[in-house]
Length: 220
Image (cartoon, rainbow, N blue to C red; front, side, top):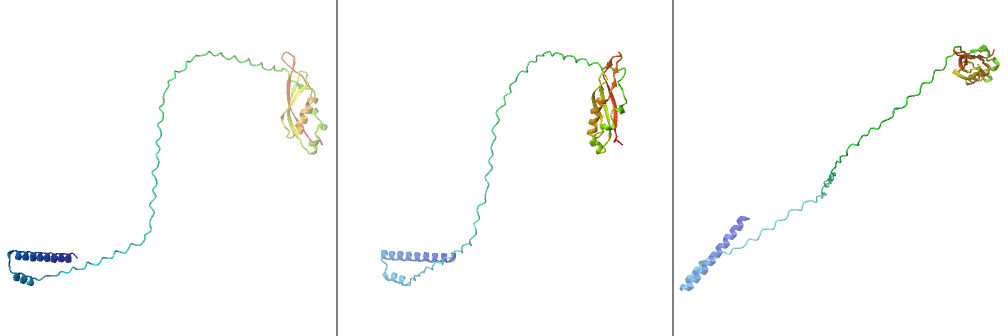
C-alpha cells in the first residue's frame, strides 16, 4: 500500500511539471514572436500522460465483537475500622491531708475476775442406803408392754440425796435400750430408796449423791 501511494504521487508531480513547462514555453513563444509552427510541432510531439487514479482500497472489516463475558461485581471492600481515640484522663490532683492527731485516752483496767467459788464440802461419811437396793423394785413394777414384748436390760442411775436422806433427783447414766424401762427406773427409785444422810467433817448432815445399776429381768 505504501509503494502504490508513492508511485501515484510521483506521476502526478511529473504531470504538473510538464504542464507548467508547456505554459512557460507558450508564453515565451508569444512574447518572443516565435513561429506558431514550432509551437504546434512541439505540442504535437508532446505526449500527455493521463494518469488514472487508482481506486481506494476496500475498507477492512472490523473484527467481530468479543463474546459476552459475565460482568463480575466489584469486590466488596470493608470500610476501615473506626478507631476511637480515648479521651485523656483528667489530671489527678493529690491533696495532702495531715495525719490525724493521736490523743491517747487512758483505758481503765478491767476489774479482776470474781474469786472462784469454794469447792463443795467433802462428806466425811457418804450417804448409804437404809435397805438393799435390790428390794427397791419388784416383778410387779415391770412395765406390762415390755413384759409382753419380752424386753429386758440394765440401767445405770445417779441419785441426788438431800440432807434429810430423801432422793431429790434421778438421772439415767446408761440406758437399758428401752425408753419405758428407763422411765420406770427414775420414776420408782425416788419413791422407794431411803438413805442415811451424809455427814461432813464437822458432823453436820449434808447433801450427797449415789450411783448404782439395776437390772430388769422378765419374771419367771
